[in-house]
Length: 158
Image (cartoon, rainbow, N blue to C red; front, side, top):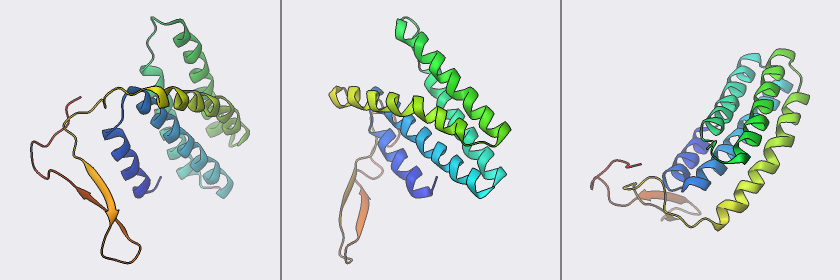
């Protein structure tokens, strides 16, 4: 994942509510899975291992965020465990079919959570985050981010 992608995710996380955070985790998983697939095709074993570890980290976070008082959590846990095992098999066998199997599970789940997230108008999880405004600068066709409220009561409250 590039530094620009990390910055975009960081900004989105700082302004997201609970369901948006789950969608962001799915998107990060999909990015790491795509990165792993391209690393596998390129034969870069070190980068493959790193991207698969990051993808498994996203799955771990999704598993840890489950609320088991709801019946659907058990089903989601089984799906996440399957995806985790597929990522491990990919690392061991160096076969992209395991990434495809994981994507067959995660893509529909991401779409379902994105639909749920569209209807969720709750407040962001982090409060006291800096406001970021994007706009055109004096340069030709440049978009520049500027922070509002620099230094005024900085720090996140979760």
